[in-house]
Image (tube, rainbow, N blue to C red; front, side, top):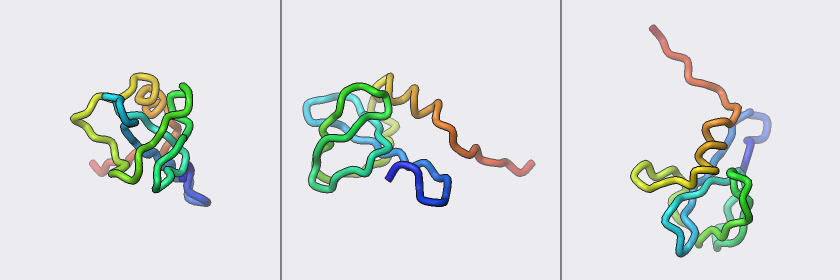
Length: 82
């Protein structure tokens, strides 16, 4: 997934590796059956479990490295009518 082809859209997927309590982020396409991906936070590969919801869970703690990089992504900001 990563950056959408021709759209400039950044696709971030969130996941919780088995045995971990924090969610991590990646720009990689997530394997449906599970497998290794590189993390947005730049730490070692993490194992993605078999398919689960890939959106950020706001009630679960995030990996500090992944969340910091998520906030630093260059992405379009919403425009507000006012």
